[in-house]
Amino acid sequence: MLLADLGAEVIKVEPPLAPDFTRGTGAARNGMTAYFYNTNRGKKAISIDGRHPAGQKILSQLADRSDVLVQNMRPGKATGIGLDPEECLARNPSLVYASISGYGQTGAASGDPVYDYVIQAVTGMVDAQRDPSTGLLDLTRHFPADKITAHTMSEAILAALFARERDEDKRGQHIEVSMHEANLAFMWPDSMMQHSIVGEPDEPGLYPADFYRVYPTLDSAIVIMPLMTPSKSICQAIGRHDLIEGGQYSTLDSSNLHDFQEIIADCVKHWSSDKAIKTFRNHEVPVGEVLSRANIHAHQQAIAQNSILENNDPVIGPIRTARPAWRMGRTSELLHDTAPQFGQHTDSVLSELGYSSDAVAKLRTNGVIA
Image (cartoon, rainbow, N blue to C red):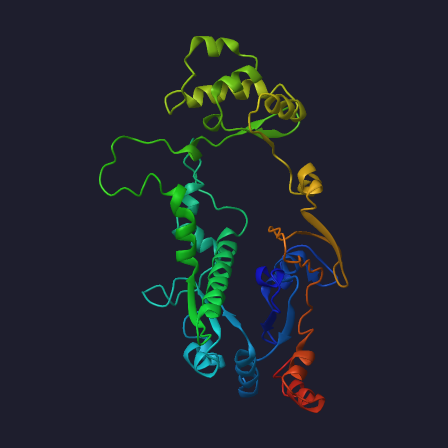
């Protein structure tokens, strides 16, 4: 979908008897889920049985005409449906063949089935969610590992396309991204700051995220981060000038930060969120209200920037979706407003490949397409 938002014609392939599981996950209307819509907006959808020789022929024909092929099957499985990377590149040397796997192509775990929650566990995400006061572990309650991998692969594909443009022979290449390595790279800069130095560091360091905290208010909650703001500004905001004069919180570190946060919490719990937001803003303290997911589309900046689009898909009807995050000064923006039904574009794509209506009908009768 990221590539479609950048202008690519994207053809999604699903097996006739195994539609994308996101078609049946979460809130739905008229048989289409919001989850599917929000990850497949702007694509075409075809249904091909890659286990059937006639289906493999169609997939090969598509690979021969494409700039990019993306597959996220376990290592070796794509060969079984006629999409071996070496064979595809031999036929179409300009192809960018992109393989996503769980753990990569080698190693004892390379053939293991992998889902988002598994990668969260083995890349430190679950440990990073450990409650600092109770030690309890938790998963991040959305699918970050999936989305991180998608963004990583999109970056790699764009770089490969650019490299192809610079290559005299316009050669493509095989890109491999594993969920494991994509998420290790994503987690490492900040989550591993305490665990990167081999041997003994000079002295114990402070990990800022250990002090992330939500401050309840009378009607909801806010977030601020004392480490990122002069403590003087916070003290002025909460009316505790005595803390400034005493000097005990002029410098914040692990020895006094928790105590300072308790003082802030004791004040904020008597305020409405609106008062807290206005008061801290007036003292140039970065602050945010904790919004329910049902209301984030109504945030003043989301409205001002038109960040959340309301589209009218012919199947699911009125639906909100996040706008592509980039704004370009010269390139026209693409704002796709529909997502494909199962197999919706099978006939039209096969027609583009040169199949007659009778040939398409025969393929359907034989269960090769749906």
